[in-house]
Length: 245
Image (cartoon, rainbow, N blue to C red; front, side):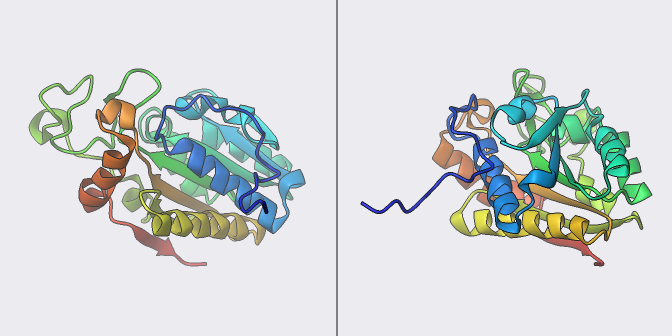
């Protein structure tokens, strides 16, 4: 039998710790496929977050560092300035990027740091028990919003990409998803474009990926994908938000 699907060289052959139906494993693979295809494995340096993806270095077979919570862009900035010839990217969830790391990502973008950011938005704090995140939808129940997220009490979902779009140092922003095969392919194209922008030294770029969290959404993996399509994309529309490359 001919093998149709092979593991990317940049991805280790190990079992992952992620929950069934989680999007991190899929997004990890897309990152590895792009790195292999553009031939930059030996010059790639990733910075992992605090959150569910804290152990990304166990799955990626290229140089990866760990940063303190929310400080991922600052660490990536230092690495890129010392090694301008490397491909440097951060991989962050909504807790790491949109909560404790809000100032870090805004200032990295405002400085126009020549790095790429993969921002995984699943709307909850998956690592620590499913608490409300800045990206939690209105009406969504979480471990810390038992009466759902109410604008008058908990405020509105934070749209990081739209905030970043006004910064002149930011050259490319695209929001994608992994809820369907078409969306997965779009996510891979966006990651590749972000990496190529950096390799061409054009500046700061970021890809937000809407991702399922079946465990803390209380849904099956299939229902979680349907929720992204029916509910999440209404708050976070897919597509290119900024492209001035």
